[in-house]
Amino acid sequence: MAAPLKCKRTFWRGLCSASQSEAGVDFNLSEEQVLLKDAIDKLILKEYSFEQRRRYGVTPEGWSRSFWGQLARQSFLALPFAAEHGGLDGGPQELMLVMEALGRGLVLEPYFGSVVVAGSILRRGASETQLARLVPRIAAGELLLALAQTEKQSRYELSDVLTAASADADGYVLNGAKIVVVHGDLRRPVTRSGT
Image: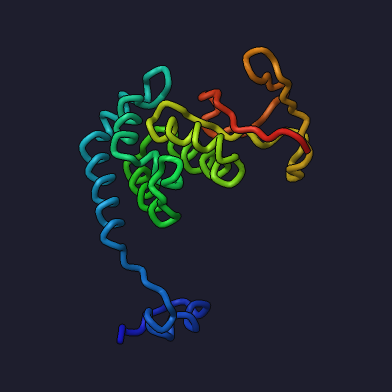
Protein backbone atom coordinates (compact mmCIF):
# COMPACT_ATOMS: atom_id res chain seq x y z
CA MET A 1 0.00 0.00 0.00
CA ALA A 2 1.28 3.44 -0.95
CA ALA A 3 2.22 5.89 1.79
CA PRO A 4 -0.33 8.62 2.48
CA LEU A 5 0.22 11.91 0.74
CA LYS A 6 1.40 14.78 2.92
CA CYS A 7 -0.60 17.99 2.57
CA LYS A 8 0.10 21.32 4.19
CA ARG A 9 -3.00 23.17 3.05
CA THR A 10 -6.27 22.50 4.85
CA PHE A 11 -8.25 22.50 1.59
CA TRP A 12 -6.39 19.43 0.31
CA ARG A 13 -6.33 17.38 3.51
CA GLY A 14 -9.49 15.46 2.67
CA LEU A 15 -8.15 14.44 -0.70
CA CYS A 16 -4.68 13.73 0.64
CA SER A 17 -5.80 11.63 3.60
CA ALA A 18 -6.16 8.64 1.31
CA SER A 19 -3.17 6.98 -0.26
CA GLN A 20 -2.50 7.58 -3.96
CA SER A 21 -3.83 4.16 -4.91
CA GLU A 22 -6.99 4.57 -2.82
CA ALA A 23 -7.69 7.97 -4.35
CA GLY A 24 -7.03 6.61 -7.87
CA VAL A 25 -4.30 9.16 -8.47
CA ASP A 26 -1.00 8.19 -10.02
CA PHE A 27 1.41 11.04 -10.64
CA ASN A 28 4.13 8.81 -12.09
CA LEU A 29 4.96 9.17 -15.76
CA SER A 30 4.46 6.17 -18.03
CA GLU A 31 7.49 4.76 -19.86
CA GLU A 32 6.38 6.52 -23.07
CA GLN A 33 5.95 9.83 -21.21
CA VAL A 34 9.45 9.56 -19.75
CA LEU A 35 10.84 8.98 -23.26
CA LEU A 36 8.86 11.98 -24.56
CA LYS A 37 10.09 14.20 -21.73
CA ASP A 38 13.70 13.12 -22.26
CA ALA A 39 13.48 13.71 -26.02
CA ILE A 40 12.09 17.25 -25.80
CA ASP A 41 14.45 18.15 -22.93
CA LYS A 42 17.49 16.94 -24.92
CA LEU A 43 16.39 18.78 -28.06
CA ILE A 44 15.98 22.08 -26.23
CA LEU A 45 19.22 21.64 -24.29
CA LYS A 46 21.11 21.01 -27.54
CA GLU A 47 19.41 23.56 -29.81
CA TYR A 48 18.10 26.32 -27.57
CA SER A 49 20.82 27.95 -25.54
CA PHE A 50 20.12 31.52 -24.51
CA GLU A 51 22.51 32.76 -27.20
CA GLN A 52 20.72 30.68 -29.86
CA ARG A 53 17.38 31.99 -28.63
CA ARG A 54 18.67 35.54 -28.94
CA ARG A 55 19.70 34.87 -32.55
CA TYR A 56 16.31 33.31 -33.34
CA GLY A 57 14.52 36.29 -31.81
CA VAL A 58 16.13 38.87 -34.11
CA THR A 59 15.21 37.08 -37.33
CA PRO A 60 12.35 38.59 -39.39
CA GLU A 61 9.92 35.92 -38.09
CA GLY A 62 11.19 36.17 -34.51
CA TRP A 63 11.71 32.41 -34.22
CA SER A 64 13.55 29.59 -35.99
CA ARG A 65 12.05 27.68 -38.93
CA SER A 66 14.95 25.26 -38.53
CA PHE A 67 14.00 24.47 -34.93
CA TRP A 68 10.33 24.21 -35.98
CA GLY A 69 11.46 21.61 -38.52
CA GLN A 70 13.22 19.68 -35.77
CA LEU A 71 10.03 19.71 -33.70
CA ALA A 72 8.25 18.30 -36.75
CA ARG A 73 10.90 15.64 -37.47
CA GLN A 74 10.72 14.42 -33.88
CA SER A 75 6.89 14.34 -34.12
CA PHE A 76 6.21 16.94 -31.41
CA LEU A 77 3.91 18.82 -33.81
CA ALA A 78 1.86 15.64 -34.38
CA LEU A 79 1.50 14.92 -30.67
CA PRO A 80 -2.09 16.01 -29.89
CA PHE A 81 -3.74 14.73 -33.07
CA ALA A 82 -5.42 11.37 -33.66
CA ALA A 83 -3.30 8.65 -35.27
CA GLU A 84 -5.92 8.15 -37.99
CA HIS A 85 -5.17 11.70 -39.18
CA GLY A 86 -1.37 11.45 -38.94
CA GLY A 87 -0.94 12.32 -35.27
CA LEU A 88 0.32 10.46 -32.20
CA ASP A 89 -2.82 10.31 -30.01
CA GLY A 90 -1.15 12.35 -27.28
CA GLY A 91 -3.30 13.71 -24.49
CA PRO A 92 -3.12 16.58 -22.02
CA GLN A 93 -0.35 14.97 -19.98
CA GLU A 94 1.90 14.62 -23.01
CA LEU A 95 1.17 18.19 -24.10
CA MET A 96 1.97 19.33 -20.54
CA LEU A 97 5.39 17.67 -20.72
CA VAL A 98 6.20 19.36 -24.03
CA MET A 99 4.84 22.76 -22.94
CA GLU A 100 6.83 22.62 -19.66
CA ALA A 101 10.02 21.94 -21.61
CA LEU A 102 9.28 24.68 -24.15
CA GLY A 103 8.59 27.10 -21.30
CA ARG A 104 11.76 26.15 -19.45
CA GLY A 105 13.73 26.76 -22.64
CA LEU A 106 11.94 30.09 -23.32
CA VAL A 107 11.20 28.72 -26.79
CA LEU A 108 9.88 31.35 -29.23
CA GLU A 109 8.30 29.04 -31.79
CA PRO A 110 4.47 29.15 -32.20
CA TYR A 111 3.79 25.73 -30.65
CA PHE A 112 1.15 26.94 -28.20
CA GLY A 113 -0.79 29.06 -30.68
CA SER A 114 -0.52 26.74 -33.65
CA VAL A 115 -0.49 23.20 -32.24
CA VAL A 116 -2.21 23.54 -28.86
CA VAL A 117 -4.83 26.29 -29.34
CA ALA A 118 -5.62 26.15 -33.06
CA GLY A 119 -5.02 22.39 -33.05
CA SER A 120 -7.65 21.97 -30.32
CA ILE A 121 -10.18 23.87 -32.41
CA LEU A 122 -9.40 21.63 -35.39
CA ARG A 123 -9.70 18.45 -33.35
CA ARG A 124 -13.09 19.49 -32.00
CA GLY A 125 -14.63 21.24 -35.00
CA ALA A 126 -13.10 20.13 -38.29
CA SER A 127 -14.63 17.48 -40.51
CA GLU A 128 -12.83 14.19 -41.14
CA THR A 129 -11.91 15.44 -44.61
CA GLN A 130 -10.43 18.65 -43.21
CA LEU A 131 -8.48 16.75 -40.54
CA ALA A 132 -7.12 14.29 -43.12
CA ARG A 133 -5.95 17.23 -45.26
CA LEU A 134 -4.61 19.58 -42.55
CA VAL A 135 -3.11 17.42 -39.77
CA PRO A 136 -0.35 15.88 -41.91
CA ARG A 137 0.71 19.39 -43.01
CA ILE A 138 0.72 20.62 -39.40
CA ALA A 139 2.66 17.54 -38.25
CA ALA A 140 5.23 18.09 -41.02
CA GLY A 141 5.71 21.71 -39.95
CA GLU A 142 4.39 23.02 -43.28
CA LEU A 143 1.17 24.59 -41.98
CA LEU A 144 1.12 27.08 -39.13
CA LEU A 145 -2.17 28.20 -37.63
CA ALA A 146 -3.42 31.02 -35.42
CA LEU A 147 -6.85 31.27 -33.83
CA ALA A 148 -8.53 34.61 -34.55
CA GLN A 149 -11.57 34.61 -32.29
CA THR A 150 -12.04 37.78 -30.24
CA GLU A 151 -13.42 41.01 -31.71
CA LYS A 152 -13.21 44.42 -30.10
CA GLN A 153 -16.95 44.95 -29.72
CA SER A 154 -17.76 41.42 -28.52
CA ARG A 155 -15.98 41.57 -25.17
CA TYR A 156 -17.18 38.31 -23.54
CA GLU A 157 -20.08 37.59 -25.89
CA LEU A 158 -18.50 35.07 -28.27
CA SER A 159 -21.53 35.00 -30.56
CA ASP A 160 -21.10 38.73 -31.33
CA VAL A 161 -19.12 38.26 -34.55
CA LEU A 162 -18.88 40.90 -37.27
CA THR A 163 -16.08 39.29 -39.29
CA ALA A 164 -17.43 37.51 -42.36
CA ALA A 165 -15.96 35.08 -44.87
CA SER A 166 -17.00 35.39 -48.51
CA ALA A 167 -16.11 33.01 -51.32
CA ASP A 168 -13.91 34.13 -54.15
CA ALA A 169 -11.99 32.44 -56.97
CA ASP A 170 -9.06 31.47 -54.70
CA GLY A 171 -11.08 30.27 -51.69
CA TYR A 172 -12.33 32.74 -49.09
CA VAL A 173 -11.75 36.37 -48.20
CA LEU A 174 -12.08 37.41 -44.56
CA ASN A 175 -13.50 40.85 -43.87
CA GLY A 176 -13.30 42.14 -40.31
CA ALA A 177 -10.91 42.71 -37.45
CA LYS A 178 -9.77 40.39 -34.67
CA ILE A 179 -7.78 41.25 -31.55
CA VAL A 180 -5.40 39.25 -29.34
CA VAL A 181 -4.37 36.69 -31.95
CA VAL A 182 -1.49 34.61 -30.58
CA HIS A 183 1.07 34.40 -33.40
CA GLY A 184 -1.36 36.25 -35.66
CA ASP A 185 1.53 37.19 -37.90
CA LEU A 186 1.35 33.63 -39.28
CA ARG A 187 -1.72 34.64 -41.31
CA ARG A 188 -3.32 31.23 -41.19
CA PRO A 189 -6.49 31.88 -39.14
CA VAL A 190 -8.87 29.13 -38.12
CA THR A 191 -12.33 30.61 -38.56
CA ARG A 192 -15.89 29.57 -38.16
CA SER A 193 -18.62 30.38 -40.62
CA GLY A 194 -22.30 30.80 -39.91
CA THR A 195 -23.90 31.84 -36.65
